[in-house]
Length: 306
Ligand code: GLU
Image 1 (cartoon, protein in one colour):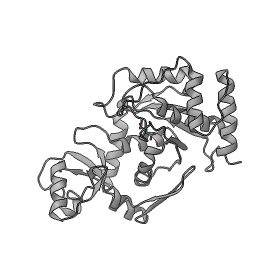
Image 2: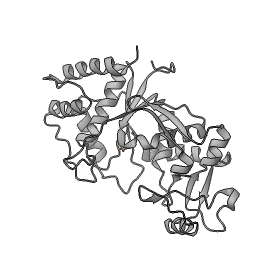
Image 3: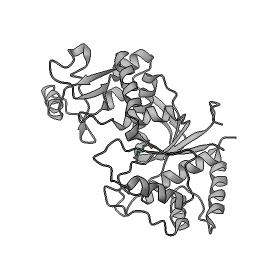
Image 4: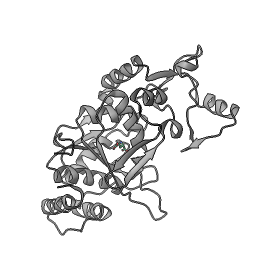
């Protein structure tokens, strides 16, 4: 059970852009341990909405690697690429409620709008959307719709929420972000027609009854956005725990983009031991089921409130 009284359901939600590496196994193991330590369910969801970045067969590689490590989804895995109708329903609901709107702006239009105001505002090299196509500012101005965006200002006003969204991470403690200022009206459906991660993850976490999200710390920055989107859709907000990242010798996060090698699950216990150490758990000699049971106990003692 969770604090809210809903039966615990957790998930691991890899993007199949390649096989698991040492960093992604940390999130997989942590989410599995948290589910087991709570006596709850653990689900695997393949987040393959960004088709251009997905690698054919990587989903099966990931499922095989997880299975080799003794991490089995309690329900058949789901693939986001098959769930477009659900995301469309959510977007339609937001649009009808005046909380999402179509946007005609190209990246260049956004640059130009900011330059005209003399207000450079960079964030992860991408500019905050200046709100050009907000309905109250004239909408599409006769141009064709490209992307769909969340009207963050309208959402906060409708919910009666303050400009700054506060939330408490189970590991990192109190967090805050002024979503409208820091991120702006973020994309729900991209100009190329693909579903944005933010919408897909929020819809799926809710439809799958996820009570606890356990994932890598690099995703922490998305949480306020997801909380606002949950509010807009009238959905419950799960609890969040962001795990430490595995870094390479240069201190960069291990990722497929910077060439992290695929996890060799020929020796699953060695892989899990490396992940466990990142999570502050004691290395185990095996066998695998005993190691997992031991870590579940350690995890329960540290992260599960009596
Ligand atoms: N699919 C995301 C990733 O692999 C994780 C999403 C999440 O856990 O919220 O980075």
